[in-house]
Image (cartoon, rainbow over all chains, first blue to last red; front, side):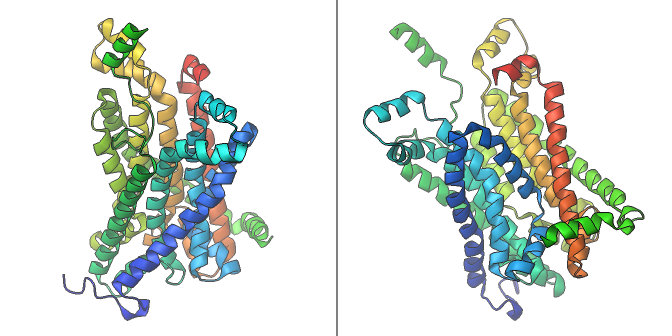
Length: 235
Length: 222
């Protein structure tokens, strides 16, 4: 374990400082992605023809390797954190937009009709009915987006030490200290799992009406045959 | 739009079209890495997802496993492998497989769970074996979703296989990594454009596979 937490001085951060930096570089893009994805998804729900082209564009953008994306952006935003955060924001869209669209579409028609009948306007109906019911799907998307974002930040190490914990990987090769690479990989994995766990807790807090099962998606599994039989007799 | 200039310069330079660093060679290498990684990931993810989905057990364990797989940073794994194993294809394949297994596994499981139970019960009532039910009743119905999972895994691999170049291997990542170190941004943008193009081709290929393998009745229902 010698030197495991012995961070080379060229990174100008302690281990905890790198963790803070890493979280900032990984989580801000997810937030930004959510802010973009919410209205975009609403447009896709409202105008059905818009959904396929949006999916195509986000998929192609998602396919651009992060390193190339960073390098192209250096021209515009320099070797900064922002250069790392813009591609990560774009990458989250390919996960968040379908998740939100599916979530909002899963709201039953009669629920919408009932809320309209109760005098909800379109905006209030969206905020108070559609979004809450879509929360499980949105959080499922956020979990995947956040975890992959935490993993992708490390590639920023290749454009002038903008990769937070990823910079340890660089230093591990330069100084031939493999324990730094172990530190980086383990720390990133644990961070990802912790943030993922926090999102699960957030979902439990936001959806007290859901059955308490460790299922991330609100997809109905097979209905219980006994319950079906009961329903049959009840009819 | 200097990016468009970069792209047109890159593709019009005849030096990029032949030799060991020519576009055909690099595309060939990239396709090879992608197919190998996808085959390995599918060999792990598909059977496990199909069987667990059929019996409807172990969904929570699977999602934990998938989260753990996603949490392992691909680039970090690559550096770690290279530091401990030296240079080679195996240390590119392992991170790529770790990246691709979670989407395949989770989507396959969910696809199997979403199959309407009534035909499955009918098949069981007709005396089909479990394996027969899985392969002849559930699989055809779940196929579109399963292919969707494979497709997103394939796109991720196409994009991420560029890291092979960072540890001295070939593929389209060569242009990106070399361009970065040579300050030749034309190369970087050209390489990125090729990768994006390959992702589009991947989408098209999966569209074709879906059309050829999914039964018309299932497509009509969806």
